[in-house]
Image (cartoon, rainbow, N blue to C red; front, side, top):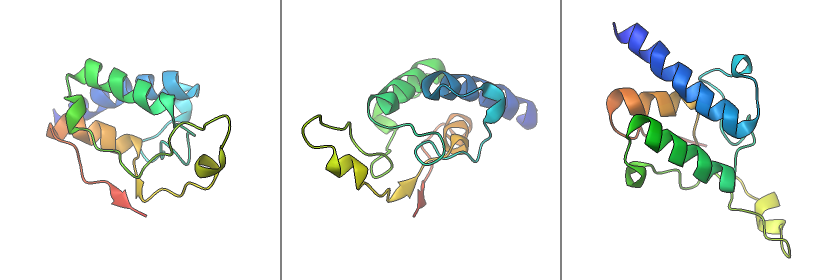
Length: 110
């Protein structure tokens, strides 16, 4: 039963991520890093987390992605975004685990 539940949740998470990053559903796997592999950052992060929160009734204030993504580039100074180095990594599996565990998981430090 746990395996079936994970597959069901994984499918919904993949759909959300695929919509946000513009990738095909079949090109995703749980090990994909949202920033490094899928190039999700800026406003796309907000959209992803809002959709995730709504779909799974996961409190948005319990989601901590600090140090995982750069902010939105500013038209007059994109340098901070270009020089950004993540301190923590968030993968698709972290989103799936959050739903299954009903709490935000500890993210990998880089």
